[in-house]
Length: 317
Length: 308
Image (cartoon, chains in turn green, purple):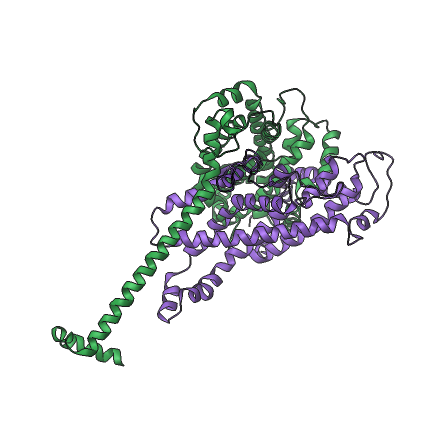
């Protein structure tokens, strides 16, 4: 009510309004609260920037530290005082890691194990995922529930069983055996993720192909599979990364066969490199940088692809 | 839905079924069976069925190592997950602020730790916590003088526990930032604006309008993260090996469930690996994980998807 009156006042006689007491007072308080709010907002904004700055420092400092440590000489690293810049930058650590350790073997072994386990897991997952999405058969629902239960069972819990299984089929202390165990971990997730993606593809696609005389297998292989590529790629990447950092099962299944541990996977090798305090830490840092950069680049490159393949497939509603 | 002949369905299911039977179901069934036996390294072939003896060993006494380990793990899960949530929420709200410039940079900076192989992160942090040469003690010495520093990993259980909490936060909160930011961006601006017009303060707007709308995204992420933290092995084991251990032969301050089980196999001082006992521990952990998974499914409505 009073607001209306003020409005009438100010709009009716804009020039004179300032001289009459009432509207002026309103105008004054309004500007005062406006500056107050602006100040508070700016303080708030500064606070947000400080907070983001601290979080960024927390996130990036370890990364920065490892990069500079990889360039530092040994004396600098084994000092009890803080040094954030290498005084005499050197590539010696990289030369040592590439030349004197089995680093490239570890990377190669891990690439092999992760690729093999991804192929094993995905190849068997895609057919099952398609069948579970498109066909209706007895026990379908039970299968889906059983797969969920299996997903709650991490491979590490069955370590005795895996050890025995690999012994029976003569794959103990082999990279193939390790890949088989990793495949077990990836297959269940892949089935669910890819099945969820197939669910979102319209059924008319296959119906049209089958009317044209294509077989079910041909329809699946040539039409549906290429369409599900985002979900397959996302599953592949997750499986791959899962195996890339796995230590516990690898430590049980793989035993070193020589002095430089050429048959180790990457996590085993990195642990052996760091756990041994006779080995300078700069070597470990250089190896970390070498191993992280390709993965970081891959992740950033695949990020968008990766998100759509995951969100559409598995996280619905 | 496609109408196909029965053998086509059979052929499609065959590769999946065979592999799942071999590498998923058989190990599970074997472990379950093993948990009723007294098989050990010394009784590798001449073991016998001993009923529920292993389970009473694991669960029978409230003073057993196992309960201690479970409680310690649950404490770790509670501390970690609530900090993930808090920090994830704070960073997401900060990034969602329309007046913040350079969003792409901050976002990238905050999720970058995610892209590093966790084995490297763990070992780097282990070096950071090193008493003599670690960055954290070097930093403390700037203020406390050359004799300063904390024996993080080999001193008290509390500091080692604190250390693995910090590392897990570094590794995991970006997941919450991404999830919550996504949910925040889907909250219609009209709703908060309407609340503002009605005179709600920013705290009221957040508690009564924004937060309830975030719940569908936060709840499954929280449960999922509780599950992964509960079964966390790699990171903690690589940093502390489950230690420090005050009481030899018993679990240490960071011996969480998976580490406890693992150390029964390869731990120092284990001469006669008790396979039956280990299997019983595994079955109990499986039951806990299964219940947590069910809760997460209920929260994210996947169960209704199965029924479709």
